[in-house]
Image 1 (cartoon, rainbow, N blue to C red):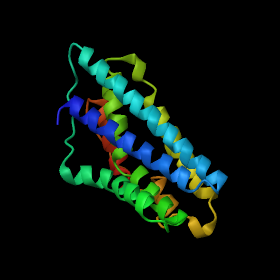
Image 2 (image 1 turned 45 degrees about the horizontal axis):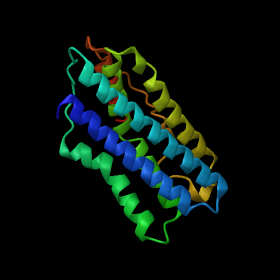
Image 3 (image 1 turned 90 degrees about the horizontal axis):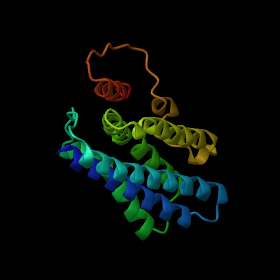
Length: 194
């Protein structure tokens, strides 16, 4: 996959996620707080999709591009796309979708490699276009918003997966040496999950 194809793929995931969150907010409209949270996630994903569209334009206008140091294979693509595709189906076709099921899908999707790849790609774009230097902060705010909401949920709809795992708490240290700072950050984020 070349750089533009990867950015386009990431944008398609952001748009799919946004669509899922919008439909979910409508589905759970009776619970104003829950619906409002889902609506905010939809707005975040729409913003991320817009950033990626601008990144594509910046890439096309750039004189030279940095090397995209990772490959996105079919397994990774399916791990990232799968939860949203399944959730889209459940929201549209399963009237009994519970809040707990929805929360578990959000955790599975949002704390996958998806956001790490997004940050890595945007860091590379920021290397030649300063307009994109603060996109990592946008993703971190998005993840923090999700974590805070999950922590405040009633026990019966808390995610199955431990929040400690989501917070990337780990005890071992690994030294990552690479001259590419974007790749170092990406690799660090991925290794924290293991």
